[in-house]
Length: 287
Image (cartoon, rainbow, N blue to C red; front, top):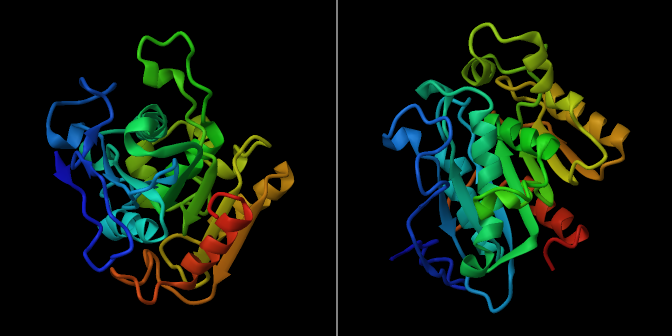
């Protein structure tokens, strides 16, 4: 066993000894195209020491479904640790490696189930499991937020019996639509060159919001030239129509992929981080 360290400067928190990463499936993942590292989806745990079950965040980095951005993965996890939350960074399979929907959604759903299945090992409060995604990771998060399932009670694998529904959703400059305002690279990596129009509609998540969609925190920047702000606005509008509570923040300034706009030990993160904590407290997700 090895330690997953946050940083020595985060002196108020101590991490448990854990695996450096955990495979989502002990055997070959469903739909795997090979057995190389790129074919094996994993979770990397960043755990805080606590005497009670702890709120937990599953982190989905962005990267256009073609890569995984560390500053939207590991850095987020370290910041959540600093706030007293567990975090797990998901390495999901990518379009640049030949994968297409629904493989990415399978990985995200399995991650939420696995965190709940191993709650006793990792000190997870199973009623307070959030998901956060940035850019294309925000698309994947919003897909799970709108297309989760309760689990299969008849499944042989006990992990598959658990719900994949996150309790809270956090979407950072997310790709939402596969339509007019989509991000072309994300769409191509997720669906291929000439996707079926029905699949385009299914993965346009502003069209998939239901009253059972979890409460969401959504933020974007007006200046974003890579992923249009309309994505966040359309998703928030759909949440409003469905009666789902949400916070929406549109900041005028900020490039795409800004993340926390800071590095550990996070002396001056972007205001969205402060606003998120305020909202999480209002939801009762953190104290």
